[in-house]
View 1 (cartoon, one colour):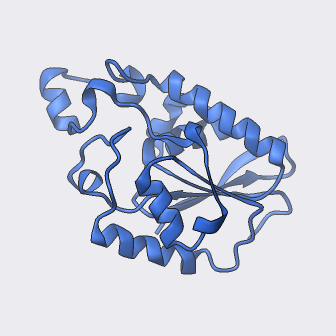
View 2 (spheres, rainbow, N blue to C red):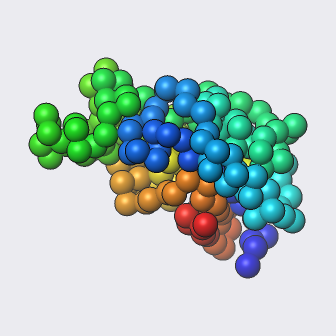
Length: 193
Protein backbone atom coordinates (compact mmCIF):
# COMPACT_ATOMS: atom_id res chain seq x y z
CA UNK A 1 0.00 0.00 0.00
CA UNK A 2 1.49 3.33 -0.96
CA UNK A 3 1.42 6.41 1.19
CA UNK A 4 0.08 9.88 0.45
CA UNK A 5 3.51 11.17 1.53
CA UNK A 6 6.77 10.93 -0.43
CA UNK A 7 8.52 7.58 -0.28
CA UNK A 8 12.25 7.06 -0.51
CA UNK A 9 13.21 3.88 -2.34
CA UNK A 10 16.62 2.42 -1.49
CA UNK A 11 18.46 -0.04 -3.72
CA UNK A 12 21.64 -1.76 -2.62
CA UNK A 13 24.08 -2.26 -5.48
CA UNK A 14 24.49 -5.60 -7.24
CA UNK A 15 26.97 -8.31 -6.32
CA UNK A 16 30.71 -7.67 -6.57
CA UNK A 17 33.58 -10.12 -6.03
CA UNK A 18 34.17 -8.55 -2.63
CA UNK A 19 30.51 -8.56 -1.52
CA UNK A 20 30.36 -12.21 -2.57
CA UNK A 21 33.46 -13.10 -0.54
CA UNK A 22 32.55 -10.94 2.48
CA UNK A 23 35.38 -8.41 2.13
CA UNK A 24 34.70 -4.92 3.46
CA UNK A 25 34.24 -2.75 0.37
CA UNK A 26 34.18 0.90 1.26
CA UNK A 27 36.05 3.22 -1.04
CA UNK A 28 37.62 0.56 -3.30
CA UNK A 29 35.86 0.87 -6.63
CA UNK A 30 35.03 -2.77 -7.30
CA UNK A 31 32.93 -3.57 -10.41
CA UNK A 32 29.80 -5.70 -10.47
CA UNK A 33 30.16 -9.39 -11.26
CA UNK A 34 28.23 -10.87 -14.19
CA UNK A 35 25.64 -12.08 -11.68
CA UNK A 36 25.55 -8.59 -10.16
CA UNK A 37 24.93 -7.04 -13.58
CA UNK A 38 22.15 -9.55 -14.33
CA UNK A 39 20.47 -8.87 -10.98
CA UNK A 40 20.81 -5.10 -11.53
CA UNK A 41 18.96 -5.44 -14.86
CA UNK A 42 16.09 -7.07 -12.96
CA UNK A 43 15.77 -4.11 -10.56
CA UNK A 44 14.06 -2.02 -13.27
CA UNK A 45 11.16 -4.44 -13.77
CA UNK A 46 10.85 -4.79 -9.97
CA UNK A 47 10.39 -1.01 -9.77
CA UNK A 48 7.94 -0.86 -12.67
CA UNK A 49 5.36 1.86 -12.08
CA UNK A 50 7.51 3.71 -9.56
CA UNK A 51 7.37 7.47 -10.08
CA UNK A 52 10.18 9.49 -8.53
CA UNK A 53 11.19 13.13 -8.71
CA UNK A 54 14.92 12.40 -8.41
CA UNK A 55 17.42 9.54 -8.69
CA UNK A 56 20.53 9.72 -6.50
CA UNK A 57 23.57 7.44 -6.47
CA UNK A 58 26.70 6.85 -4.49
CA UNK A 59 29.84 7.74 -6.45
CA UNK A 60 30.98 4.09 -6.54
CA UNK A 61 30.83 2.34 -9.90
CA UNK A 62 28.94 -0.57 -8.30
CA UNK A 63 26.09 1.76 -7.32
CA UNK A 64 26.20 3.86 -10.51
CA UNK A 65 26.21 0.77 -12.73
CA UNK A 66 23.35 -0.79 -10.78
CA UNK A 67 21.43 2.44 -11.37
CA UNK A 68 22.24 2.43 -15.10
CA UNK A 69 21.44 -1.27 -15.59
CA UNK A 70 18.14 -0.78 -13.73
CA UNK A 71 17.23 1.85 -16.33
CA UNK A 72 17.64 5.04 -14.28
CA UNK A 73 21.09 6.17 -15.44
CA UNK A 74 19.91 9.17 -17.46
CA UNK A 75 18.36 10.73 -14.35
CA UNK A 76 21.18 9.83 -11.94
CA UNK A 77 22.69 12.52 -9.73
CA UNK A 78 25.82 11.40 -7.88
CA UNK A 79 25.92 12.45 -4.22
CA UNK A 80 29.24 12.01 -2.40
CA UNK A 81 27.46 11.65 0.96
CA UNK A 82 25.94 8.35 -0.30
CA UNK A 83 29.39 6.71 -0.40
CA UNK A 84 29.85 3.50 1.55
CA UNK A 85 31.46 3.50 5.02
CA UNK A 86 35.19 4.26 4.86
CA UNK A 87 36.71 1.10 6.35
CA UNK A 88 40.22 2.56 6.53
CA UNK A 89 42.69 -0.14 7.60
CA UNK A 90 39.95 -2.79 7.29
CA UNK A 91 39.28 -2.13 3.60
CA UNK A 92 39.27 -5.41 1.68
CA UNK A 93 39.44 -7.51 4.84
CA UNK A 94 36.83 -10.06 5.98
CA UNK A 95 35.21 -9.76 9.41
CA UNK A 96 36.62 -13.12 10.57
CA UNK A 97 40.14 -11.88 9.74
CA UNK A 98 39.57 -8.68 11.72
CA UNK A 99 38.23 -10.71 14.66
CA UNK A 100 41.38 -12.87 14.65
CA UNK A 101 43.47 -9.81 15.48
CA UNK A 102 40.80 -7.81 17.33
CA UNK A 103 38.44 -10.19 19.19
CA UNK A 104 34.96 -8.82 19.83
CA UNK A 105 35.23 -6.09 17.17
CA UNK A 106 31.90 -4.81 15.85
CA UNK A 107 31.78 -2.34 12.97
CA UNK A 108 28.82 -0.31 14.22
CA UNK A 109 30.21 -0.03 17.75
CA UNK A 110 33.95 0.23 17.10
CA UNK A 111 34.35 1.77 13.65
CA UNK A 112 37.57 1.31 11.70
CA UNK A 113 41.14 2.47 12.33
CA UNK A 114 42.04 5.21 9.83
CA UNK A 115 38.43 5.10 8.63
CA UNK A 116 34.99 6.18 9.80
CA UNK A 117 33.00 5.58 12.96
CA UNK A 118 29.24 5.06 12.97
CA UNK A 119 28.92 8.69 14.09
CA UNK A 120 30.91 9.84 11.04
CA UNK A 121 28.63 7.89 8.70
CA UNK A 122 25.63 9.22 10.64
CA UNK A 123 26.67 12.81 9.88
CA UNK A 124 26.60 12.01 6.15
CA UNK A 125 23.28 10.17 6.50
CA UNK A 126 21.80 13.17 8.32
CA UNK A 127 22.83 15.44 5.43
CA UNK A 128 21.11 13.08 2.96
CA UNK A 129 17.97 13.04 5.15
CA UNK A 130 17.99 16.85 5.27
CA UNK A 131 18.20 16.92 1.45
CA UNK A 132 15.37 14.37 1.20
CA UNK A 133 13.14 16.40 3.50
CA UNK A 134 13.98 19.62 1.64
CA UNK A 135 13.02 17.98 -1.66
CA UNK A 136 9.73 16.72 -0.15
CA UNK A 137 9.40 14.35 -3.09
CA UNK A 138 9.77 10.67 -3.96
CA UNK A 139 13.46 9.82 -4.44
CA UNK A 140 15.22 6.66 -5.63
CA UNK A 141 18.64 6.04 -4.05
CA UNK A 142 21.37 3.58 -5.10
CA UNK A 143 24.10 2.96 -2.53
CA UNK A 144 25.82 0.32 -0.39
CA UNK A 145 24.77 -1.83 2.54
CA UNK A 146 26.34 -0.26 5.62
CA UNK A 147 25.62 3.31 4.55
CA UNK A 148 21.97 2.47 3.79
CA UNK A 149 21.66 0.71 7.14
CA UNK A 150 22.85 3.86 8.95
CA UNK A 151 20.52 5.96 6.78
CA UNK A 152 17.56 3.80 7.81
CA UNK A 153 18.50 4.03 11.48
CA UNK A 154 18.80 7.82 11.33
CA UNK A 155 15.53 8.08 9.31
CA UNK A 156 13.58 6.61 12.23
CA UNK A 157 15.50 8.49 14.91
CA UNK A 158 17.88 5.76 16.04
CA UNK A 159 21.55 6.51 16.63
CA UNK A 160 23.81 5.54 13.71
CA UNK A 161 24.83 2.39 15.60
CA UNK A 162 21.22 1.23 15.21
CA UNK A 163 22.07 0.31 11.63
CA UNK A 164 23.58 -2.88 13.06
CA UNK A 165 20.04 -4.24 13.40
CA UNK A 166 19.23 -4.04 9.67
CA UNK A 167 20.56 -6.41 7.03
CA UNK A 168 20.62 -5.71 3.28
CA UNK A 169 21.22 -8.19 0.49
CA UNK A 170 22.63 -7.15 -2.87
CA UNK A 171 20.03 -5.62 -5.23
CA UNK A 172 17.49 -5.55 -2.41
CA UNK A 173 14.83 -2.85 -2.41
CA UNK A 174 13.69 -1.01 0.73
CA UNK A 175 11.31 1.89 1.24
CA UNK A 176 11.41 4.70 3.78
CA UNK A 177 8.31 6.80 4.27
CA UNK A 178 5.90 8.21 6.79
CA UNK A 179 2.97 6.87 8.78
CA UNK A 180 0.32 9.47 9.62
CA UNK A 181 2.20 12.60 8.58
CA UNK A 182 5.67 13.98 7.87
CA UNK A 183 6.53 13.99 11.58
CA UNK A 184 6.33 10.17 11.74
CA UNK A 185 9.11 8.67 9.61
CA UNK A 186 8.92 4.87 9.29
CA UNK A 187 10.45 2.00 7.38
CA UNK A 188 7.66 0.89 5.07
CA UNK A 189 9.46 -2.11 3.52
CA UNK A 190 12.91 -3.62 4.05
CA UNK A 191 15.32 -5.88 2.13
CA UNK A 192 12.85 -7.09 -0.48
CA UNK A 193 14.33 -9.44 -3.01
